[in-house]
Length: 486
Ligand code: GLN
Image: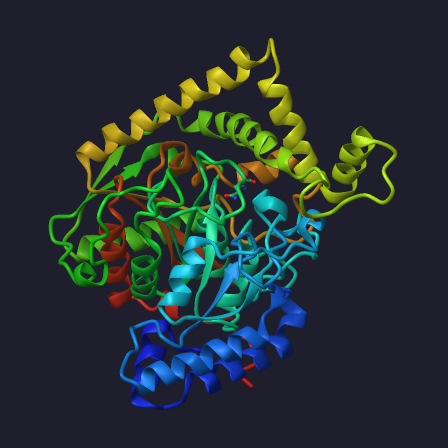
């Protein structure tokens, strides 16, 4: 039961192999038993989960089940969940229980899904290793001496360890795709604005996007279907109609034009990763696709531009955590300034403080033109490079990360080497484009991800391309060897 995908579980529930209540109880037991090793959950919501499961079973008995009714999920701990703590991986929100649900949580609840709990993450989604969490680092199920990636590290590790068949994540610079790659699962970052961000705690608002993390593209299609679409509560959410993602999964790839950006295949990336990605691309050629080299000439500017813009937005977004309205408050403040200072000094961890300082500096008078404006100009140029490339090809393929899962602590003392992790992912966030990471083999014993990038709102195409690959390969079905099956 633990190895089944959402689609398989949905069929098993329809056949009556087991009930949602049995499934939910079995997974909660498994999490309690195994997650002491992985630390992928911050909060388990047992009571609510069992209630939701009973309600789902009743709906099914009444013939009112949808494809998602009774299926388990866990949410990254930055999506507000009514009645269940939402910590954002921070001491600042350790005591925060939201009075409302994020729109995507609400939609998945409406579809009858069962929330098992909230997953661990880098503090305020800042990081690439899940080591900045106030709740401790997450261990990669493929090798527990290594990181799962970040910031959606708990969401990725929980799916890889078969603790839950699917999770939600958020991607500001790579936080869905990079941990998906490092943990050997499927992670989709949709087009900016495809999924409502209402109730998703903001990091960098012009980049943030939610998405599904699953064990197959087919499952990602199911979840995206329920999550995507217009939301009157989020004015940045697109009003564009949501197509039927499952309907196009089996479209033929004959004639598909794939672009390979030469800057993404250059030195500096683990040769085994490049080899796995090339092997994946030859599978697509067998499926009738053609391949050509393209160029994204400003790739090397994406990290410096992102690490000005994202901290600038973060410094502004995080000013709301001041000890006045909710979250952590320091003990017996002398006056208002003391309240702000000590609350923020105590509540935020070192990486969050670093970002707030960088962002505040970049936005301050005299530096704004030199840094912020310049970075915005670079952002536009990078976006135009993608638009030009996607006029010539249907999808772009590339690695997700320059190296596979690194050791816990390995990059902790060197923020810049940690930031380099995002080299292949964050330009999509600068451009607002969708991308998917799917497993395409191993470098030694560690999973490798293939990144497929598409045009705006081409999620259906990305899922189709990923699904066709998963029909002819079995990388996505591999589980870490020493997972306890019990
Ligand atoms: N690693 C990047 C950062 O720390 C991206 C994080 C994210 O996508 N949330 O900003």
